[in-house]
Image (cartoon, rainbow, N blue to C red; front, side):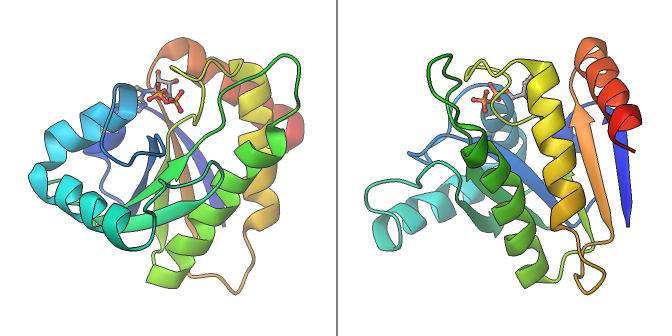
Length: 174
Ligand code: ADP
């Protein structure tokens, strides 16, 4: 099992599944979500709309994950997960951990071997990068079992500051 850090844009990753830091509406938004729908084309949104109509009439709850195909992107699937909004008053890290765990469960159910994650909740949802990196890396390490189809998890960090924080956190927890 490999955990890799990459600096770059998640929409360009040639992996089986990329994970989208979506919002519960599944109807698109800013940040990674916007980039995925922009580059992936309208098919992804059409599938999201269908999921809203069938399985998630009230939206996808924080901590859960669901897959669509990846439209025009080089990946095969997009796994949409909803991160928690950061709160100073309330510890929501179990929900952030759940995003990683549930996304990996969905990836395994698809038979995906390679999965790319963004730093969920660290943009609009304002989770401090250092803490988000710790939760992300420890959860993925624990969640990956030898029996799973997933053999590579790639964290795709959009800027050098995020990359540096993940690198440090990876070294600390290795
Ligand atoms: P959230 O609402 O979960 O905070 P955002 O999309 O606002 O999600 O941000 C999550 C993280 O993804 C941020 O660190 C942001 O810099 C990063 N990001 C934005 N666009 C991309 C992209 N195209 N590829 C990878 N990461 C991205």
